[in-house]
Length: 228
Image (cartoon, rainbow, N blue to C red; front, top):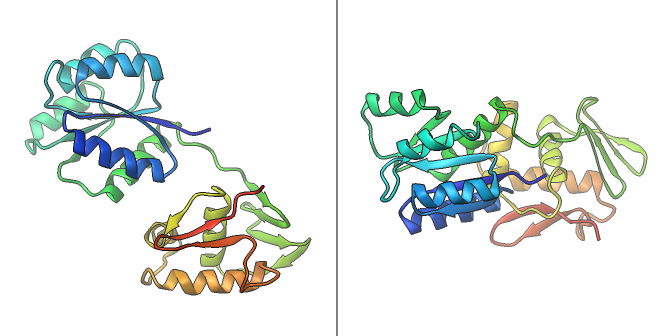
């Protein structure tokens, strides 16, 4: 089930940027321009996580938390340009789960979002066994079958395939896929992903030059073809 994130910030350009990036990461994103609007949206949408600016007109971030924490335990990540420790501590004491200091990178923000969702048990669980067409991947057994025959994959190839199979139809950039491999002590450049994808295709595709499963998304990276 897709998780919903509420982005609250008075700068429309930042809301648009964050919404665009998190949507590409597979989240549903709703937005609000101030704390008062955020209360209305949060009550209607019941988000799984809130990204909250502190300095806003109408109703600031602290006041929003003071009101909304009486109604829900939704995880909150503060977006703040303030660097003073007392401001950060106050936010955490009022119920925030984490904070990100502006300016921030989208990669850092996404990592913080996923980390908070894991800690609070709100991240979408990924199935242990994934099947797409004739490809069967078992996370626990660390095995892959194609047409009921076991296929030997390297750890990096396995993680790449598992990432793609968990989100059919979603386009991953090479940088996205590179990030996924950090957990297996991976070292390499974005172009190294191309090598792993080429090797994967030779192992799981009937015709690697005309892949049925792993599609190239030109200008972006790769995706697993959605089932018809």
